[in-house]
Image (cartoon, rainbow, N blue to C red; front, side, top):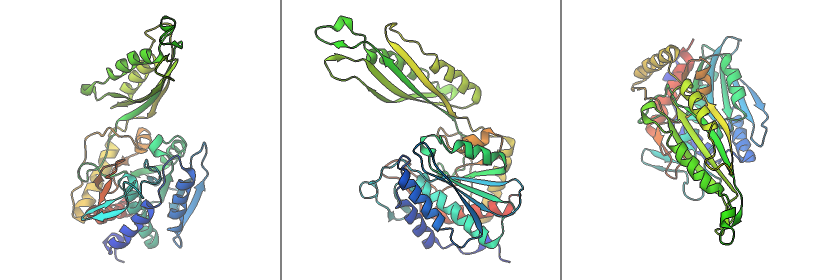
Length: 378
């Protein structure tokens, strides 16, 4: 029998499939749009020997889709793709229409991560038709990765505990490199409550929530330590009611990135332990680490070397990248000790921007790599 990965890949059909997925805009907070995307994925499985389970969403988020290929209860391969994007509906008709320009395909969510999801999905369909996978494959499509996976994390971790390997279809890095480690991510909300007063007639009576928050912002930003790989970012701020009112309320959102779990605990404690400079202003800090660090283990290194050998057979070099600052659902599975390879998706650039794109030249070799991983991991 001809090995499935050696059979011809219909690149034109792949591009068309990616187009259909990209043109179904699916921002995380739009439950109906994300569910329409899952309907499309389900339709693309028609006639294949796979089991499909739709897991209902909650808390305003869309459903999850669980696809199983292969028989038996042995620990197998878990594939993770998120189908939600950051771009709002209307991006396709405005700043970022789907288009081809030389080796580039443009479109909202194409690089992060519908291009990678589709190539892995195509590989799954190929091995399901051929029955060539050595292990059972669970392919999980999730609706909420772009906001920290609040409803899918529990499902991801439960499936990972039953898996031997995890493959994540996040986009490639820096010219096609694989991802074997990521920083941990913390998210916090900080609120200050002062005493409102008229800024002209009663200025002395007021206690500014914004002034207090300015002190806290400087303290948080000063925690960044590049030598330790720690970054703290105040990414959003709101507060006040009018220019002539001492502001009673202010709120900020804080992002924390760390290399290892111990540092995560340390800086989580520091941020949660912030104290007000002005004793008359109330300060409340909530949140914590929401993605554990994805640290490279011996199991991950062995899985990487296996993938690199397959890539050489196919005809390209699969290099490893340094620890990346962006988090993914692979953080959860790696932290459980399951060998996890990330960055298996399409190569390209511009995630979350109006010039987001993937490289057509990366589609075929990376699809073949996914097929061979399905065929050889045992």
